[in-house]
Image (cartoon, rainbow, N blue to C red; front, side, top):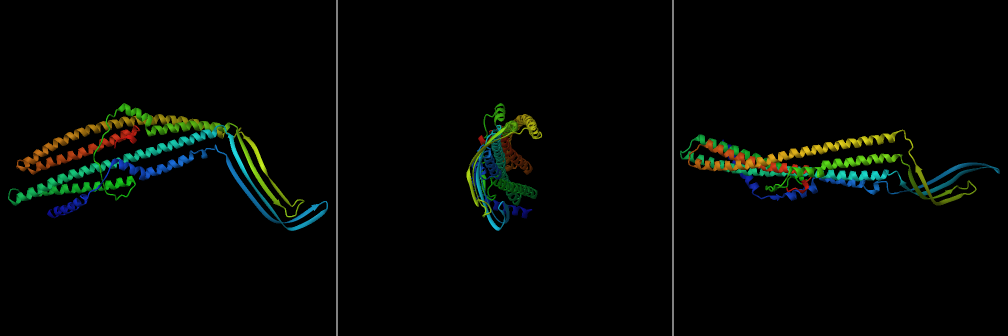
Length: 439
């Protein structure tokens, strides 16, 4: 038992040296800034926005004309047998060369408004990608501060465990001194040592959990997991939150609601896009061509060159394609109805989620106040216990129980503080106000 106690003293002394070196404070705004730049999910979503922006460009809409160029060259060596009014002749090993090139411009003047609605669909897809990127950022912020506040909670826990450990060490030392002077029994010394060892283990365990959570936050932030830092343990709660205001905000700003509305608009445009398939389409084309043929003496004219511009127009009309267009039109209408149903469901789910989150938030605030009161009560009780223990008016068992009660109350208060803040952030995320929240 004594060997174990000495070993724990050595370990704790080494840890005290490590923690006393001082650590950089990672502020909440700094954590957000680092995450926006380095978080893996956020970086991926930003790249998705670039792709979607490219797809929504006018260059991908069909509005612009197309220009193509073509060139061709042919060289041949042939044997020819020619027959005419003047007789016949044989020409062997005749070399002929044919060269040609052209540039063509095509432009769709009218396609039944199909490209107009296709372009609108692309624009809505870009909006949807932006909302998806926003959702990724919001979820990342929730994950970041879930880890950040867990570090803050564990920091408090380590501090509370350290204070408890200091009290237990002094009690153990006092018990040994008292035993040496015959004022105590060996049992009191052993009990004090057991409590000290227990508190040492708890301190080590919480310290390990703290370091693990710091590495986890470094990973979420997208930086080296070995970066050493401490966090700001202060908390600012958002004042004046009202359920009705949050409900209204969720209807207008919740990212899921906005995504559903965008998908509904897309479904409406898709109906109009499919309707355009039955409308005649008008196109224009213009070009310039050049060709040169060297017949190698096989004809009346051995060489011939042609060049010049051309212009034309075309009209196409999909009169009947076996019913495929009608099937697409019918399916797009059904898809629109399904999207309306989905949007109604999302709106109801969001209202439910806000109501549930509000209940969790209110409960967390109540628990926070209760735990604050509980700590105050247990602190007064422990202070009186310390005085009575010093006077020998209570046993070590009573003292230890008061010590444990205070520690448990402190740990519960730490949990309640950060649980209330986490509940607040979830509520703000559902209402679409997370990006403006006080972290």
